[in-house]
Image 1: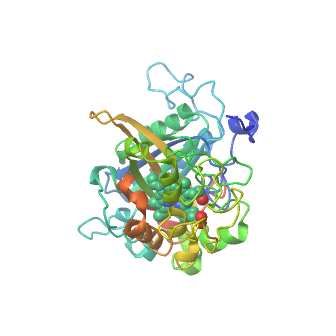
Image 2 (image 1 turned 30 degrees about the horizontal axis):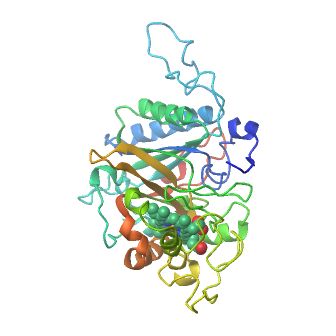
Length: 391
Ligand SMILES: C=CC1=C(C)c2cc3[nH]c(cc4nc(cc5[nH]c(cc1n2)c(C)c5CCC(=O)O)C(CCC(=O)O)=C4C)c(C)c3C=C
Ligand SMILES: [Fe+2]
């Protein structure tokens, strides 16, 4: 509350370009709100699926620029037909809306191994299902999915409107499997942004990969044709993990213990034993008793690239509160999203290290998981989401 916003209001309400080499919504400065949805494809007809992806692309290009989903609009059609836009974003600005699509492993082969749409041979090795991690408590009904769309915006109504219209356009081809609302981004993806706080009250996203780190992004974020799948050249892999936080227990933990668990000061975000938020982590710095200032089991040490064969990820998660659980506790946590060039080489080793050793595990539980291949950007008006996969 005591810091000045760094993004001017006009930028927060403006439009993010839809066309480009990479999809928007990955290195785009993280917006404030999320509506994430996973769909099951319910048709067996490849042509219908491709045709829906073309319709989705056209609608996404329009909605991200602040226009109605369809060319007629919410209120200009004939009275006898349902409108081609649902109307709740009329009069609202684009609000930085980005729509990012991903393809799940089950789109390529179903659980019995059937090549559903003739694309099984194009499934990249990087899109193998994620392994089960120690203490995972995953709920299948809010995990996985054939397709996902990540809608981010600075106005929740704009994000919800976009997902609702995509679901409407996809009726008969896809059905919503699960969806998640999020608020208060828990990561910065640009150095222009103030680091936000998660529901443990800590600054989150300080040591994230940032849009400005172009060489690191080439190394750790963007998939390349040489990685094995030419249709993913310029794309990235998205991991989503809904992580429930037992915040009532956390709130009864002392400040010192909270800071030891994270490895950073709660106020400034500086690594323990360091001065400033953005100081590089130095694990040789000692505390007053000669012990390492950052404990070996501190979250930031276990997640650090030096402890995980150099693996780095771009985090883009959101806080969530889904009401309460009927036992007087908030159903709250972190909807973790990360983008990386290969989740099996980056997210998996980091998460294994955390699942085995992180003291934070006493206060969190992973309840859903999903992996999606996000193709490169839509180049122009003649291109569409998934063209290279389906051509
Ligand atoms: C597998 C990847 C990660 C999961 C899952 C994860 C969950 C998680 N993290 C926090 C809070 C913080 N994380 C911080 C840093 C951090 N976290 C990961 C990875 C996962 N976190 C990485 C790679 C890093 C950066 C480590 C580094 O290089 O320094 C921080 C510190 C601030 C920051 O740098 O962002 C906090 C705070 C929670 C609460 C959580 C699950 C609920
Ligand atoms: Fe973390």
